[in-house]
Image 1 (cartoon, helix red, strand yellow):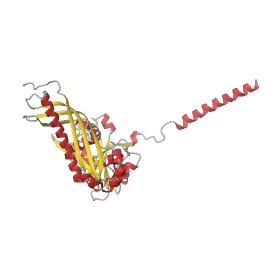
Image 2 (cartoon, rainbow, N blue to C red; image 1 turned 90 degrees about the vertical axis):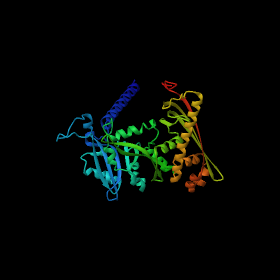
Image 3 (cartoon, helix red, strand yellow; image 1 turned 90 degrees about the horizontal axis):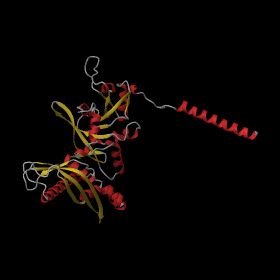
Image 4 (tube, rainbow, N blue to C red; image 1 turned 60 degrees about the vertical axis):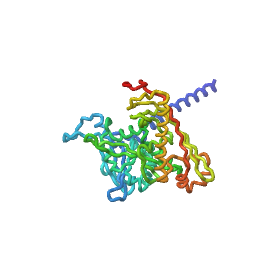
Length: 397
């Protein structure tokens, strides 16, 4: 009987000890140890990088959201003037980190960078070298690697000041548009993580989308136009929108968009909508000569025609498919010619060789730019037209 009582007392003691431990954990470890109240932070949605006016060091611009203004857009400042839903802050320093820290001299709240969505970089910075400019964003824990990177020939502040369309803040609008690139497949969005991955691999040149401002009905708006080619970590040239899509065909990143061309043998044009596409790239080495085979498959539908000709016949279908394949091949060839001009392997041919024939890559890597320029490239495009829409022939035919 005594042993049973002792066992019961021990179980009771363990239960009490467990409850005390749980209570201790709940009291002393609940909550966020590094909690920061929103009203004490300046939430940054977009950042820009430029050289200082003197040419030494960096100027960092911040698009800081005014949360209260977004909730109540009719709120005005003390003088009766309507306030914008964001504040543009500029700060400078010999390095990007010091420029960001120097912003505390102007902002009454601590800058919070974790919600930043876009980083707009002036082309002069990119031509000089992106590694010193991006080191802080890669090294520091607060900026996210999901940042969209963009190039501009203008002051990045001009981009942030542009009309945001249906959005309240231009940085948010830019981020949303980049995620909808497949509607045209004429820009190639790049996140910081993707840029870092390619520059560390040292087998493929990088690209970054280009953004600028235009005047439209008296308003300044931002506009995506082409792609910057980054060789090593320096900007060396540009692709236009058609050449950009040529790059995307090879990378297998065309997810939509339209192709317009003259109807073969007829007066008028046809516009085809791209439904799906895929690509296969094969790189082989024979006697230290590079042979590349690019195969692209495309499914599309007839979206619009400006000719009175009936395009629904099997013969016209075949002609449209053939012409579409020729146009796609031409876009790829245009992108390839521009990349060879810059000596920048933006297609990842080196990466393909590295992964499938590492010995050959190690042998050719030191002089890869020459091998890339001289490579024999075979391009095959298979285009299939699968839909005509709700009508098979023109209404007035």
